[in-house]
Length: 246
Image (cartoon, rainbow, N blue to C red; front, side, top):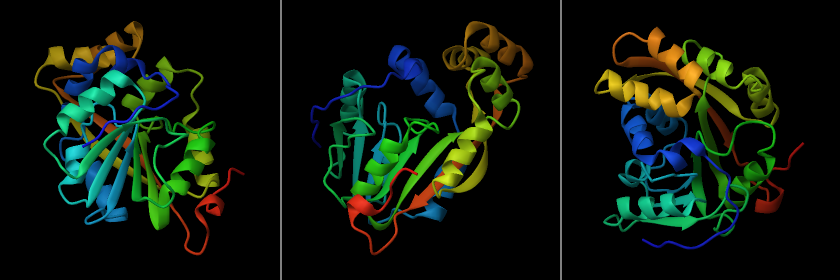
């Protein structure tokens, strides 16, 4: 396992400022593993090389490492890079590199799966990251972008209230126009207690929306829908020409 320095940083306030609560959130999310199962169905990474963009503290790296040939986590924030490296210190097939989504510290055609979960790829503006993923993918490999489906209540309703300038339908059109397929995945977030639920809502939303979400949630389970966007790199094209922003 190696850690290498890299460049530009795009802030992600929830995990940067509250990493312990975000770790609690990671443990609560998708307790049935529906998102991972969907990704495996669409592009099985067994025996292949995986890159996790914006890997944060490395929560998903060991999951990919169970069957992948190699796993590379890429994260721009130095404290999270160190946390991810510590998490996978005993996994010889995993490395963690410091880098940004639009400038991955990897050579051309180095990966079969580039995975990004609620990181960097949020719709219009992420074209450089898509082009960069296409560069590091081998022909036939896939970029898989996982984001929260803000068209589905209740979580999507809270998200839109908290981010009034975010247009969920526009984001969907962006990915569709870029050639991505779409799969919607229903999941359950399960928390150990109401205090944990409240803490997580408090880092995901502003105070007013967080309190509203907490009041509207009975018990410790949230129904949350994700979108899984998938773009396969074509065969017969050079890495530089495989995808260009329209």
